[in-house]
Image 1 (tube, rainbow, N blue to C red):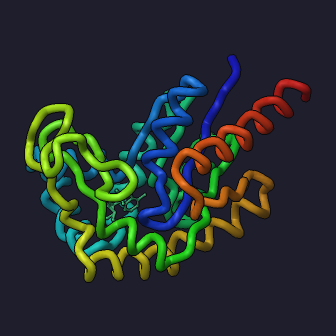
Image 2: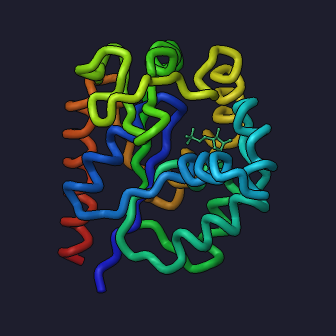
Length: 218
Ligand code: AMP
């Protein structure tokens, strides 16, 4: 059976979740979000949740041991997915590769840091149904309330300015080396994510169309 295993890579605030939603529905891929899985563990007060919470609040990556198990459980039995938020370190990329999970393509959303800081500080999420909004790009029709369920919107706990800074530090030191890694193995597709969300999505779809088209011809 044909496999479609796609990774979304990019700094915090590069628009990964918006792209993920559009691309997943266009190509019938399961939309997987590592950060959301950890947030669910925190909300459910699980043992893992209580440990990873402090790292997430500081904007740091959670220790590899917690990521490996969860990523393996999540990805090993699936053939069609788009994953946002994994791998985020070279060790994670090597681990999942050693488990036989081979990605078809890595979409790298490239955007300058000043732009993503502006985006993150205007981001809002519904604490009830998890719908995501943006005060500038994707405002709720209900103002400060969710237009799906009416709940008052909140800023994500890790979107405050100090935490944003830490998330960037983590991104540059631990995640950015993956750009070189996936370039070397020929999987990286760079997308200009400083464009408007609709254009970024369109560019991403063109890139993936090419990947799948080339694979069909081979
Ligand atoms: P995100 O919503 O993708 O920004 O993820 C939120 C937080 O979850 C991150 O700041 C990390 O603390 C944690 N996290 C998500 N994915 C990973 C990962 N692959 N490795 C380590 N920590 C992660």
